[in-house]
Length: 549
Image (cartoon, rainbow, N blue to C red; front, side, top):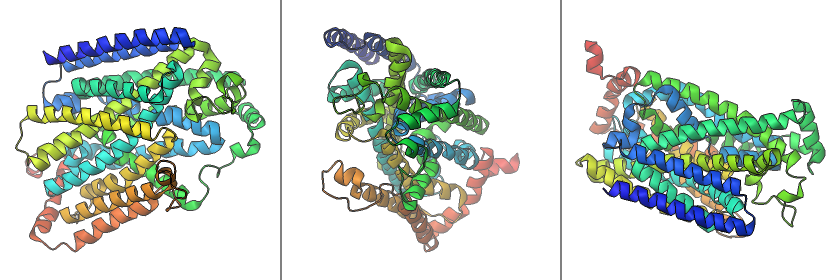
């Protein structure tokens, strides 16, 4: 009874908000086609959530959509989960501001997927159940390993959520003229509704629909930009060089990342971070077997690679069509809404109010799909790893675990709102880069070693995971990003914004050292259990079953 009442309340609240926004829009000259498409999309996704809520009864339904998603569907959902506000708004904004150098994020975000395909996808599906901590703790002591994995996951989710909330807040602020704070609160409330009631099934279909819409809209935008230059990249780049105040500098590397240490550190984070993102790893448990998991990565890599080519064209198109048009600039000749809004303004330059409405709704769909996946991953870490397996030591029924997961979703939504407000001025692609750095430092080393190194012990996994996590977080806090831009100090303590080049080696070295020096009986048993784990990771069945088979 409660579920239909709460969903009905969500629809009623949305209807009220729609009337209010329409009234405000009439007074302030807000783009009503954009507002209308935005409201229609939210109504449609709430409908999907209501449909999914009626089919979400067990923990398996809530966490993994019952394991019935196909490889193609999961590939689209993975792409939808991964092509975030940082990808669409942030990278286009970086290219708009820095030219060629913005491509470093596009390439970095993409190259992690072959690592996922060849090293992790099948083994994750064969060893795990709901979260990547299932895999990391498969032959190790459950309580300490799950605790470290859950804490690291929550830190990554929080950092990733910042980028999405900032993107959503800026988008609604530009579209509706609402104060940024109210915009962030709206996104947080919708996110809580989607995940609390629809679980993974609603999240998956929101991500699939969003991926199709985003790929379609971005394709049209890129084709429109190229059409204006006779589909000549040379003509497009020449015009951008002519228009940009940086001139030839926009076609040269080095303006965004100026020293080798920062470049290598950023590259490490983007390459290996994807293999440590909890909301991405969680999607591999939604398919039926390892074959479908492998197909998921193949489809996702193709969709994502194609999309990043489009964002590069969109960024240069914004330089040409937006930066010289006074209607998109404020009194200081800066882009209205900041560089993150370059793609949104370009959509208006290409197709007027109607296409702006479509792209804005798609951008908002992008953000909602990603925050839903992130929130579900964070809630799963709290409920499945911490509550069910650390505090309750596995002695908990499914309904209690699901109920706790929904409480965790509400708490995460509130935290995301506060973080989104605090980090309003940060570039969202850069903030995601920091999330990748923490994922590459805390989650990836332990997951990789747990799967491939017989010598890893519980003590090594805990010390390595904590060492990588603490090092990455401390370096981020002491860098300009937080120490100066957020906390308001005069000068940063750490000169490098990206910590991965320091924190990743810390994680691997600590995990290695504390494993080889662990001579306990438990450590010996954990190392001997590697053979059974290896057989299961390759076949999906236990060692005894493999022998009989």
